[in-house]
Structures are given as structure tokens and as C-alpha cells.
Image (cartoon, rainbow, N blue to C red; front, side, top):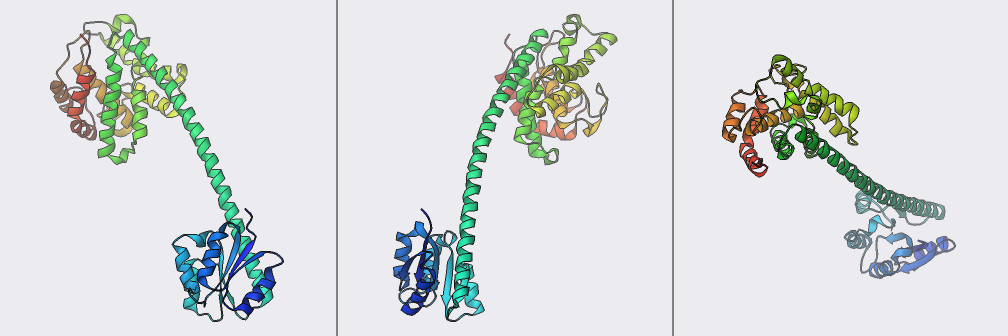
Amino acid sequence: MKRDTILIFEDNAIDRAILVELFQSDYKILEASNGKEGIELLNSHFASIAIVLLDNLMPIMDGFTVLEHLKERNILNKIPFIMLTAESSPEMERKGYEYGIVSYLKKPYQPDVVKQVVYNAAGWFQYKMQLELMVKKQNINIQKQNSILRQQTKKLNQVNEILIDSLSNIVEFRNMESKQHIKRIREYSLCLGKSVMKLYPEYELTEEKIEQIGWASSLHDIGKIAIPDSIILKPGKLTADEFELIKSHTTKGAEIIQHRIRLNDRVIFDYACDIARHHHEKYDGKGYPDGLKGDEISIAAQIVSLVDVYDALTSKRVYKAAYESEKAYQMIINGHSGMFSPKLLKAFTEVKAEFEHLLAVYHDEE
């Protein structure tokens, strides 16, 4: 409905007639001789009212009583109000503006000034409402677009997850590892990542980042598909040359992910490359392939490094029996399986029981 009406609250018939005369050629006019009557007209014609002229001194309800009543209903943000007064003071003006009126008109009226003030206020308020409506429509469109993007992202993530699961299952089959190995690595990474996030905000981990690290961890050993069976499945001790070849699964894994695997999620892709290359680095610099030291090793690679050691210790391999979880825990804490960050060990200590629970849930079948 078009807003084409002026509502005049004015108990003085002569002043009211002057205002009607000024605006009747451009607006429909509603007249109220007191505040109560004016509120009733406002309620019944709200959708068509473009502006309200409100006298300060009226019987039954004066101007400020009307404003107080309408303030509770948030009306003053939807229609511009101009207060009419024969006298003014800084305190009264301040009080009116605090209620939300847009201007004052002082009696006796100067017709040109009155018309200009009213037309300016009505035009400005109409523009404001149109702008708010446009912003609201744009927000609705943005929400729709975001919803579509979320759905597309979800589908892409599902594709990523299927791809990662498939590739990690190939590695497990190739290495004669159980189907639970990758699940444990992922769950351990999520568990330890949340502990690090809680204890050490300086790493700037979030729930989303931890989820991405969890998926990326599934590809940590992808490079082993490039290592000969005779070495991967050798039950005895490796020679120095064989061990060097085994160590190359880190660089080969990063190369495979970079050049042979197409992941739609760039963050997971970056985590996967980093983890594949650096999950055998050690905090004291004695790891491989790059001899990184301390926090030169990303927190993602540090997390997967520790959980990979824990899983290796607690799992049966062709060259060893599985250790009990308590034994594995002590070996890691005491540095028998390489040095880890004190912060990481603290976070690991906090989730010791959770690791034991995950080991029981995703245990290997005999």
C-alpha cells in the first residue's frame, strides 16, 4: 500500500486548518484533536501514513505521552514524526530526539519552512525504508546463495571423503594392515587435536581445522605404495639401504598427493601434503626427511606423528607384537619412540583414557 497520508495531531482547529491547507493537494489528511483519537487513527491507517505531525500540548494525551506509548511498539522507527510546539527549550528538544522524532516545527507556522521540513522528512524516510527493503532482499538472496554453496561444499566434501577413504584403504590392503588402522589414526588425530586446541590457543586450531587434519591424516602413509613389497612386508630387521628406501615414503607421499591426487578442498590438500612429508619429523631435529626441529614442524604433522607412533606400538605388525596401551603410553612419554613437544605430550596425557577407549572401539580383529 502506498504511503500517501499525513496524520495531524492538533487540538487547535485553526492551526489544524492551516496544516490541512498546506498539504491537502499532495496528501490525504487525517485529523485528530487529541492524543487518544490520533493513536486510534494511527492504528487503523498505519500502512498508508507517510508522516505524523504531533502537537506537544493536547488534551487527554499530550505529545510526549503519545511518544511514550508508541515507543513501546517501535512505531517511531517505521514512520517519521515531527513535533509541533509554540515553545521550545534545549531540554525539550533533546527529549523529543531521544524518543526518535525527526524534527520540530515552531508556531506560528512559516508555510514555506513547514512544507520543506515535511517533504524532506517524508522523502528521507521513504528512501530509508526502500534501502532497508533492498538490503533485506539482498540478505535473503545471499542466504539462498550461501545455502547453495553449503550444499555444493557438502557434496565436494563427500567426494573428498570417499576419495580419501578409498586411497587409504588401498594403502592398508597393500601394507597388510587392518581396516581399522586408518580409522584409529583419524580418531586419535581428532582427539589429540581437540586437546591441543583447548590447552594451547596459540596454535590457532579450530573445530573445522581439526576435522580437516583428521581427514588429511588418512593419507599419511600414501607414499608406501611406491615401496617394494619385499621391504614393506619384511618380517626381519631392515638393512640400512632398505631403511633409507622406507624413509622415502614421506617424500613420495607428498609428491603423490601434489601431482596424482585431486582434492577439491585446498586446506585438506595442504594438510595432507604436509602430514605425508613430515609425520616422521622429531621435535629434537632427529627425524626425517628434512630434519625439522621444534615448531618448524607444523602442529598438524606433530599431532599425526604422535598418534602414528601410538598406533604402531599398540598394533600387531609383521615384525612385532602389539604393546599394551599403558606400555605404549609410557614409551611415548619417556621418549623411547622419539622426542615430542612438551606441549604435545601434555595434551596427550590429558586424553590418555580417551585413546584407550578408541583403541578398544577400533581394535583389530584376530
